[in-house]
Length: 85
Image (cartoon, rainbow, N blue to C red; front, side, top):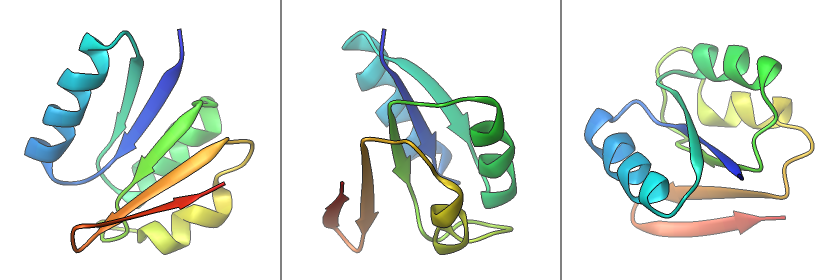
């Protein structure tokens, strides 16, 4: 089973993403702040990270350099989707 990390402080968006991804058969990890994301990513190696850039604590931009060995990183901001491979 593939694992996806959702790093977003908006509970409703994160819950919606989690619900859809779990229904599709993915395992989901959650973090609600940049600091929590670093802790989560130090203990887990998800296959995909969905990262919000506007987070409490460390921002998404500050978290991004700490993400290693991920195939893709999706970035949603202002209704735009950017994909980094």
